[in-house]
Amino acid sequence: HSTDGQSYQVLGKVRGAGISVESQYYSFVHDAVPLGKNYYRLRQVDFDGAVTHSFQVVVEVKGDNPVSIRPTSVDDVLQISFEAPIRKDVLVQVFDVAGRKVLSHSMAADTDSYGLRVQHLQAGLYFLQVDANGQVHTLKFVKNK
Image (cartoon, rainbow, N blue to C red; front, side, top):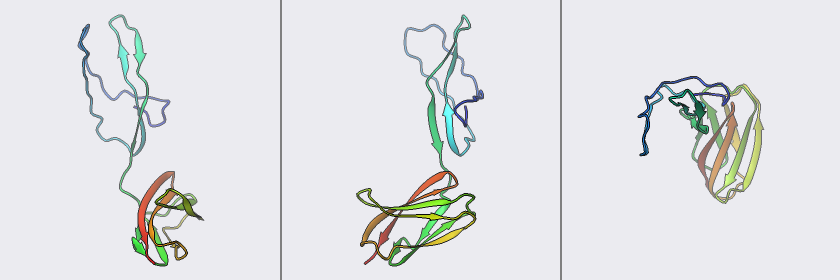
């Protein structure tokens, strides 16, 4: 296991079946997986001591969403709130259902809420994408008349 894709730590060992002509299936459970990107690979040691590594697999674990919006059905101002003050500048983007970017705004660090003016948007469904503290969060909202 690795959190940077370079330095790996052994999580555990699974004893192999030995020499076999049939496919063998093995499993291992990683308890207490950290948030963020986790890199995994298998290390196989043969009877003669030869070592081979599998290809790398990346699993991203996301925690509870630290970003919320209200109201989710809005006329003028969409209130964006953060569970904790953000450490870095934040990029806020709004996309329509066709995936076109219709609004982009940068927010300064050390804030825990922001009112985004959306009164000029057409009525419809939109996706708010917030890039904060190195994580991208996407939330849906409806713009009323």
